[in-house]
Length: 519
Ligand SMILES: [Zn+2]
Image 1 (cartoon, rainbow, N blue to C red):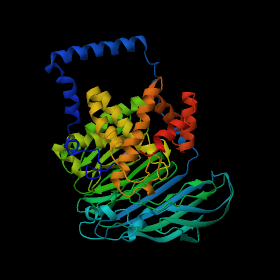
Image 2: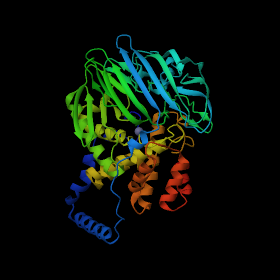
Image 3: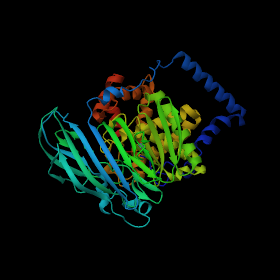
Image 4: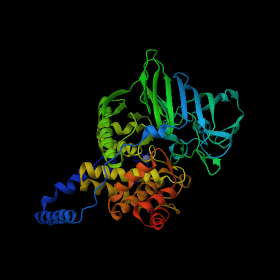
């Protein structure tokens, strides 16, 4: 996720208006204003070229494709049918989960995450607190899930919510030995609140992130039941294969994680393999532009066509850059869509929601940064999963670093330095109350600004340090990391062990220094 300038301290007013590109270019182009400076710059450049020739970094392996077909085999299968009643703001969900017990233990329950239930009450809503006025401009509006059928292998199954905000639904099942399978069927109606959030409806349409109930993660002998806090993205799920059918009222267009095609009966259908989640936005007013890049259909939906075109260009550039740096984008489609919320953006597999404020022509540079950060999450969140509750740095800091590398590759060293100053150096200098560190879990953070400064800005410092330290640079490490753990879930300790093996060093002190030390 990315906040907007309102919440991101390192997005100063200038940076919010844009200026990093020009600031960067000025660093290079305006040098001839002083001849002496030009000579010094030329001499430094010559030295840098000589150094690169004499001590080149070892060659990097070409970016590889991720083995998605193999990964998809043996994953759980969801078959989800959605039917939207736009007037009522109700989404009927019929879902079957073909579940294979891969936990290595005998299970007597499954836990499904029903994130929408956190929107039932003002005090549990993730759109409450500092966000309330921006997300609920017309006052609080409740949302939630009404369950109709919960079946295991066709029989009614006992079930109850087991956490305070009712986002963890425990379903009792007869003992299921390891390796055995069964089918869970859910029928429910999701009431979508009037809320300008990744989950909610506004006059512009429906934003349906985290609405489809998904199986939680099973770790250390228990299902995760983290509550839905307002700061950060508390969603954890393993990759699964999805088949989706969406029935929409006439005139509505979907923007979705999966590549949807409208059938003769009017329904939209699609599939997505090895995906951690399935999200969509729906609007009557989307203008859609699209371009095929290799095997990937890149789609941009926005409420103004020029904005849609700008976002499409940004998405194409980001996909190209990150595919070459970290491995080829593996899904059949990538969609960037405008969303009516007070954030910069929000990532889902195959889909990024981008705050509509960035689509103004005057904010084109801000739009680019947001699209690029969210696109980087396709590698660090979607392809390689991590613990977004306890180790949010493991996707956010990596995406901030990837954004800096994008800027360096696309716009040069000067732009990179300018952006690094605003997004990392300034974050290092800012005073943040308490003992918050980039390695802190999301519920330690009281507001989005502290979270952005510490986890995104200071967290990216770790990757910049690795880039200096590692002979092949941080990109080679991240490419190896993505290839090794594609479609898996990587704890911090696995990250540390992998880094230690890759760099042939004890990585613990470095991670402690950057992630666990308050400034
Ligand atoms: Zn993010």
